[in-house]
Image (tube, rainbow, N blue to C red):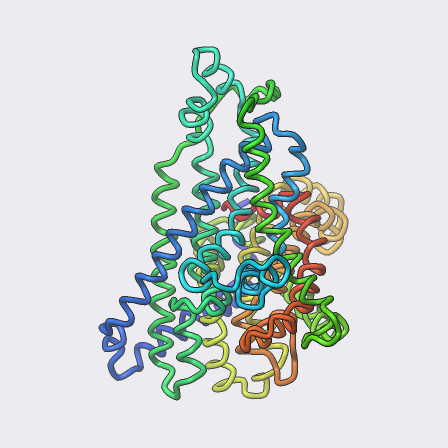
Length: 523
């Protein structure tokens, strides 16, 4: 339907998009009002930060694709023993926040770490810097590539593979010439997710002592009276993110999936033969490093003898409840904020509503540290009564993760036939009755998927929480950060372990088992 939307609905949608656009407005206003912003851009240090950030982003994206695509092929197209189990084990590292993986690597390989105490190895291994950041971010992001590639392989037309084999091509040639080209759209979508995640990461680069733009922005904000340089670097970060989005859009426009007959047949899996043992070893190593090692490290530090300095799970019950509370509030608020925009885009499609859609998704390009800086600025100047309250913190989460809620709402509404709503209205039911009895039940699964993604992302968000949390209001991410800041890994372990325990069921139900929530991010 393309009829003109109600005025109230249009104003509400514009208000939502205007609110999530505040961070970009802040950066532009702050930089435009500076005496000499070009001086910051002209510093050799700025160019170095840009190159280091882009280098890390490119390396992590390449590594995640190199790991995720072959792993997806193994569990969907081969006779690998225990494929269902490997699918779960290789996807579950998604529950690990990247900074928790960084903490686990540091605690395992650092001096006096888990491996040194347990087996006498480690301690002399240098895990920090670029190498450490690359390892932690790759382990945190390859599940995006793995899940999207596996989903694409399951729904693709396998008759093309059979046709290629009937022409005498071996498994390697079929994979390179047929299977891999058919995966290009999914690989491009997942690579974009990995790149956006990496370029906006703050926790890993800080823990690994790797100077990137996000770390420099946070340090500049916390230590300098003049925050203009931090704003300039924030605008540079947004520009780099926009460049990545534009490059991906152009690449996606040139990419075409290989078509086929669409027959829903499941041919015999590819026999690995002598490669079965190496494939099992590779999957075991990946699951061991990405899932089992971090879990073992955190358990080790949590249950150490009482004489060792450390924390306990009882010490983080309060931060755990705070984390669940703000995550639930953010999921609800983001879903409610996404609804009017989704209705405008789906039910009243026109140039103005499409512009609102683009503006809402632009928030996905804003790292948490940039969102936090902007809300500090606006709250202190225009809403001082709200500064330092949970309301501002939840508002930052909504700005940061609104696109995830909007993806679920848009997809859900697109799957509802407008004729059903018109039929309800024709039977004399009013708008509210139609919403409660027809539209609501049909869109509920999509709304729940979007809210689940917001909930998970909020639980793991670190920089916005650090900058905006009220005094004395601790969450599990801030507990991890505070302890690791002084290398007190044993004190950080209980909070990190509880964070994983709380997130794992949500990730399992909403992403790994259902799969739909993450797939919506391919938009």
